[in-house]
Image 1 (cartoon, rainbow, N blue to C red):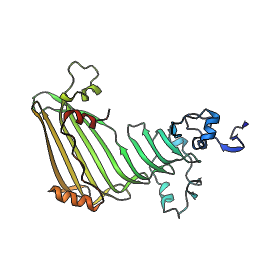
Image 2: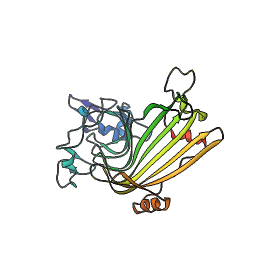
Image 3: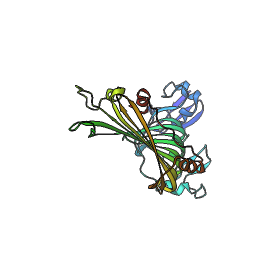
Image 4: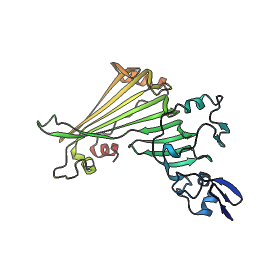
Length: 296
């Protein structure tokens, strides 16, 4: 028996508050957590694993933080005893609009593991606590594209694609503790006769790739997400010619995110081990595998 009013919905004897912002506004966020109810309504957009899918996230449809009690944590947001996270939530940056797939709490928070693809081109995959990034996850920045001079041919240009990501620990929507920033730069020849300019096909033709650079910045971060203390930068570069490819490696010591000197690989390995991390692996030296480094 299903009875509905303007504000509440009763399903199988359970009272549920309806929220907007889901793919289907006719059910509550609790329905995504309750497989039996979801199956009964046949109206919720979920994955085969029972995760909420394509949940619209925007600042105007997020639950209020001040007095919400999350049943999965049994703590009130706004309680100063909650590891001081409550007070920081009030000063958190504006929530980015996007689409979310993952688990939700009964109050509509992103809570547990999930992925949010933001409207600005960035994304985050990892754990959430009360609607903010918290735990070990991966944040991907917006991919940039521009032209650079071709050093092998005067007057010509190469297409450069730069991808950047952070993999590490998050707390209150910012990196905290150990993590690694990876910046991938790929230079390739333009496709002759292409009318789409930055066509993805340009980066799927191995012979078009001329140069690949992957920069790994390994270090610690403070509560504001700023690199602090000693870290290392490991840089791999691969240049491609008709005769094959050449892979080079360089290591640098970092202090508060800034390069101080060039160091040996053994030193970089020691610094990484002190942080409980491994030295980043080099990219493949084959053209076909290097294409796999690039996301489209």
